[in-house]
Image (cartoon, rainbow, N blue to C red):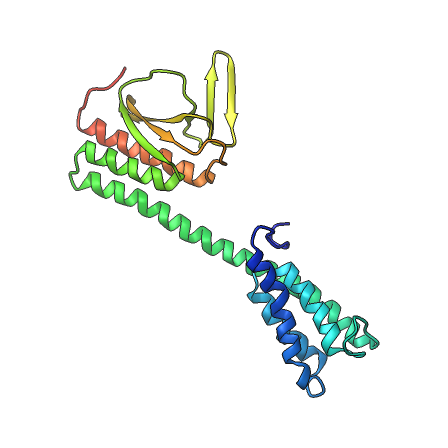
Length: 246
């Protein structure tokens, strides 16, 4: 549904979606006796494709096509059957094409995001391979986690498991276990959330994630990358032979 319908929280997109088809249809008025209804409709479809709020732009395009470019002019009525068919096709094609445009933008965003995630993992691996100290790897991962998860802050705590904190698990879920009761979260919980660091089967510490309580958790892919980064930190600590918790 969100691919079709406009975003209510983006007033500029709404104004553009309404205004752009109106402006184009008005500009075509001097040429309406020379252009076929099909050509006029195709020109307006180009505007619909360019708009993020595609569904609203498609409705606006069909309405202004009717108002300015079909007889009787300057009325929201259509006398000719072919013009009715063209207006209906304009609306349907506008909706379909705008949906395709939205999906294309989303796929582009996914590609960019995935490339960013891969770069983060590669940089951490390169730091460890180039002989960076385990402390440097941990600090690098700490900074990466702040940006990746949209945190207010993050700190690393060596070798302690004090308190019962919500935990970011290996599958990307966030949950808290108290006795036999398990609470799973869709939003960041209050206080810090722990991300444990394990290397070679040994527990070395945990990243304590200071998130904005109540905000939705980041995308699952981002949480998986966070877990992978913590594993890289654990591998660096383990390879250095640092003390660990049993």
